[in-house]
Length: 312
Image (cartoon, rainbow, N blue to C red):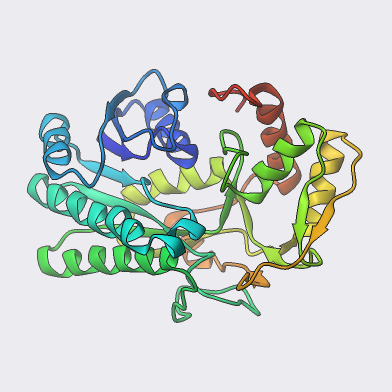
């Protein structure tokens, strides 16, 4: 298969590229390197540095690659940035997606779109299924929902078969521990430097943590299955305190966390029901939480301050 992976130099995208290359697919990575790193890109893939908002650049890449598939992981994914700069968030996540949809329509390309589950449903007393009405609490969540609706509109108008995957909290090797990143990468990065992680509030907030390797596998598998919107998570609620204890045990760094005041608007509980993805896409979260944390720790130890592909 000929495939384009947007954001393929980033955390999740680079793992998706690995799966495709391992299958023997021809892969072009389209990434502006604002967050991604060239060293993350599998040497079996071609890297094109360009912005998905640039219509001419997108058309040129599609024209050259003639892709059968586009796995769209490029995004403005910082919730804080989306609140401070909603126009920028919309340009990347909405306009950029439209650029890709138009190019895909021209070339008959199927898109798998990386959406969000954590920012989509609001508070989740029970694991949220796709039937739960979306209630985004940030512009980031809203822009991802808009992207999903554009995919659905193109499917209705043009008979395409684009798919959206709503990821839970993805973690694993290559996640950046600096700046706005997943809490796993932040905790492990601090522990690698012998510093104490900060916990906002009392640490009872719960999230659904899913390993990046399992996410990459189902993202590629979605190309072979029916179109739709699917949650990708474990259905297991893990508190921040529980997460910290696993990180501390795996790292062997014996420090206590620092407790800070709770952050305004933070969800107390966000967990996904991935039953539909299991039935329709064959998705199974095979990697245990402890094994995933161990893999992330090995990567963090080897890459702190250096970057790179690291351990897998």
